Length: 309
Ligand code: G3P
Ligand code: CA
Image (cartoon, rainbow, N blue to C red; front, side, top):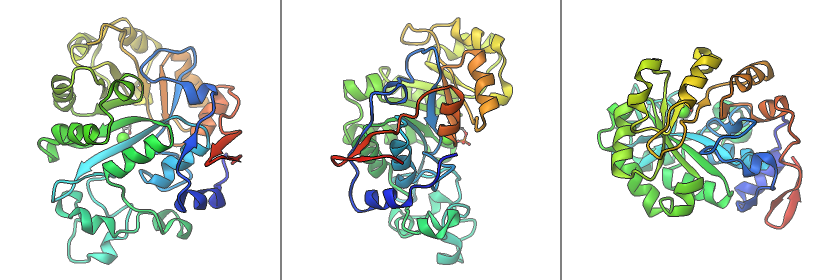
């Protein structure tokens, strides 16, 4: 297991945000292409070791040598996109103490300014009290500064009509819709098929993913608008992975598959044996070790200094 590098994280809090990932297997992987070994994707950042969906979690993933991070995007009352998993702020922030009269503390009922004041780290331990719920804009800029790549999930899109357009607007404003990002550093996924259809219709060049396990007979319909079928590992078999890979997606390439959430070595070996293209995990180091790779974190350069977690 990976020990928390609290001192190293503190340097990030002080402004050392430009990480340069090494040219290791993990640092050069591309979740849009097929590989012999699955790409390891840090779920909500390195969320086994840092508060999920915070800048601390993606900074730690970078320090551990992981290029791909996954997040969850929702919308505030005043239209700001923020990175948080639950549709309530109660589990991962101090919102109940700060705003006791506003149960059930839905993201959509709070302004961005209110959310920005919340402590999004103490629930994981007092050392994380400084962590905040990032806006998507802040999050994208940090992923960029870290040299990382993003599997962006539009979370519960039925709660947020038009969130697809909002997401694309912010991506464009922050420079994420240029050829380099769209071609190699961005995948947009959702459990909502209509949401992914909307993203594909608005920006057909973006790589998309559907979260779920459609019946094999329905896969051709999904292949019209999604490049990836990303199922729970509990629903997988080698036959299902092969059925997905046998189809071509909207960009004329075989469909890919990133499975979630695989947090132990045995599970990682199992799904790798099925031939999945990526493994989404809270424990990216455990999965990497299970794949028999050398740690990519050795020699990570932070603001010109070498940091070995
Ligand atoms: O990326 C896959 C996974 O994040 C989907 O489930 O609930 O963790 O967003 P959830
Ligand atoms: Ca997610």
